[in-house]
Image (tube, rainbow, N blue to C red; front, side, top):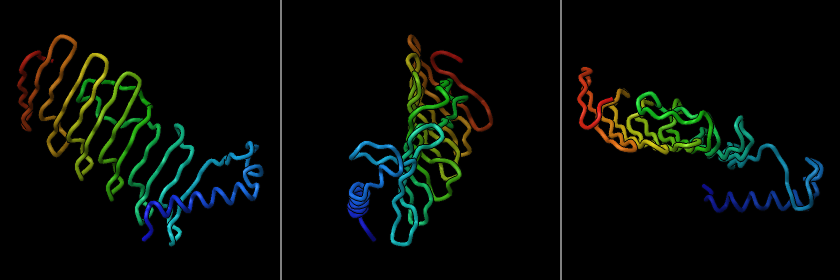
Length: 181
């Protein structure tokens, strides 16, 4: 098994060969010393893509994959899939973020996002249900914890001049401390 340093060394060697061979000028009209591609992939000894740097739907994306080629980490601009209805925050649709996946690849298990005016961290359980989140914008900060099924259990919310706690039982009973929603 190669280390990450070995992969980085391989990438640098490939880039050096491309520069010496003059291929960058054939791929695009790059200036000397510049390589232009739409996608760069690192593969292991079995030919499995382990990392890629590519132009995605919303801009550049860095993707890291496991031994089977499944995406494990993705750093990119993307359409956010945050549970905004439970938090009361409404981030912009797109922005830079980091998504970390488990083996199932159904939903990211960790989402770190930065949108215009807000930022957030969302954690999901192995079923893909969002179970904890921290989010903040200019006027509101929210910490939410949900039951394993994803339904809100406790929310701590602080606004400009008030704060409060909301707790819900799984049967649906709601209790407020501080401001009421």
